[in-house]
Image 1 (cartoon, rainbow, N blue to C red):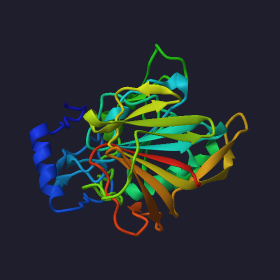
Image 2: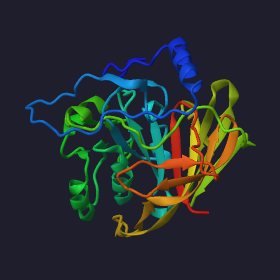
Image 3: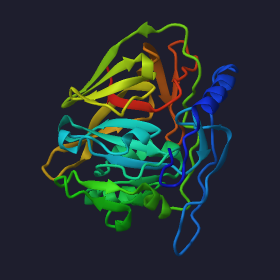
Length: 332
C-alpha cells in the first residue's frame, strides 16, 4: 500500500525473512536520526525518506524507512466513530479527558493515510508525553487559551486549523465538532525540521517464556471501555470501543500502563476539570501479545527519554512486531 508520501508497506516475504533473521539474534531495538533544526524555506516540503539503520521502525519493530513523526489528537466519543486512518498509526495512546471520556493520540511515521480523524483539541498531558519523541509535529483542532503558551513553548511543531488551514478539511456528512480531518502530508510539509522516529524505549522480539493465556481483556475508564480480543489467525487483538467492534483495528501489542491521573489547573468550556495524566516516573503495567498477558513494570525517570518496559524481575519485555496500543489508565 502506498501512502500520501509514497510510503510503501514491505512485501510479506521480505518482512518475514527480515524479522526471522533479527529475532534469531534475540531482543532488538531500533533508533533513527534525532531531531534537526528547522531551515527557512518559502514553500517547505518534507525531505525524501532515507533508510533507517537496521531498517526497522522503533515504534513497531517492522521494516520502515526513516521519516518524521506526526502525532494527531483524535476524537473518540461515539459520534466520532468510525475513525479514519487510525489503522495506519504506528502507535496509539489512549488518554482520559473531561467527564471520564477518552481521547486518542495516533503517532505516525512508517505510513501515512490520506486522511486522519476526526481531529480534536490538545491537552496539557500531551506535552510531557510527546517529549520522548524529540521534536515531532502535533496536529490538533485547538486548545483553550490558557494552554496556548505551554504549547508554544513545547519542543514540537504545532499544526492546527487556524495556522495551517490547507492541512485540514471538513466532512459535510458529519456534525461538528466531529467532522474535522487532517491531510497528514500537508501537515508535515509545514514542518520540514520535524524529528524523525527514534528509540522511545520499546523492544521487539520473541515473547517471554511465561505469561497467562487470555482470550479477551477489557480496560475501563470512568466513562469509556475498551475490549481487546485475541484473533490468532490475524496475529492481533480485535478492538471494541464501548462494546462496538472496530474491524480494521488489530494491534499486535496492547499495553495497559497504570499511571497517576490527577486534576490539572485547566478546565473545558463547561467548567469540567481537565485530568492530567502523569507519564514520567514508574509503575506497573500489563502487556498483551500473542494471546497471553504479561505482568510488567514501566520506567521513565527522564521526561526527555522513552518509556522502558520490563518483567517484574527487571529483564526487557519484548513487544510483538506491529501496531502498539498504550492505554494510560489510573494506577491500580
